[in-house]
Length: 144
Image 1: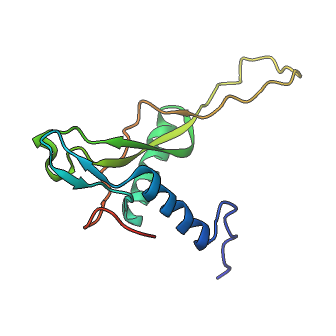
Image 2 (image 1 turned 90 degrees about the vertical axis):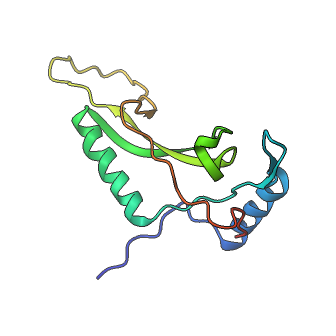
């Protein structure tokens, strides 16, 4: 079996360690809740390959059914509401995934133009559900 091509966005382990150390130093991983309790915040989120593959299948299939060419996933940082409903995650950082893409246009009735037109940027596909609830691990703060 032939090895797949190496992705172009890879970084060195050393640079990854530097990025993680910078995050831990500049963003801090300790927070104080509304009740004055100090908590260690998450600095990493883990999703299983199975969960990611399932989500990719979901967004590609449902995006196509809704007329989108799904072309990526945008990762957003968030913070859980600081209430009892969210239990131990209350007030902690999270990472959620949102599919991106472009609406597929029906070109059958259009007259072909030779003018250069900028291709529209990928947008968040609001009609598909975002994915959340990765595992922040125990303890929440990890060091790469």
